[in-house]
Image (cartoon, one colour):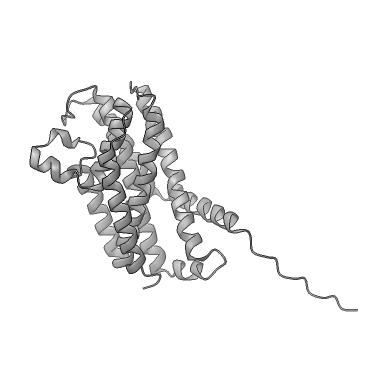
Length: 255
């Protein structure tokens, strides 16, 4: 007597699918030497270099207290923008996005998985950079420990959206080149490591409109004074909404 074939297993719940995809994305980030270099090793070297030297000038205040928030902002840019833009660009080139988009995970689940993986990576970066900063003498404000996560989450949203804009408009090789170039520009001219308050008036005002400077300003205000930089929140919200709208209209799931 023949047996009836077993019924196919039902797909996992949406939350479980997103969690599995997020763990997969996080493992890829941690195993990719180039991405790990940009996301963790270079920011760590920048922190140690800033703590051990007197250049560039970071303005008034304890140098380590000013340096750590800027390096944490650099970490967010590295993980949420540079790493995600490059990974997404090459995933699209090799049709990974197209195939995953038609699985039970779906496109929304794929994007949610990337966002969760990025938040997890940022949490790792905060633990590592914050731990080294404490060893080097960093003393953050207690209130800042509550306020700063607001800026970290906003920063992840803004820079992941910008990463999707870049990855959706250019081919993979172009994404690689432009993402790395923008990382350098944010580092040097974006008010990240060197506070924009140390720049001349006109340049400081223009730099303050960049998401990189808003993120760094917000983290510095939180960790230094325990205050909420409302203007920085507004800049990040404007960039986040704008980049999300552009990404939703221009992103391509396959070449």
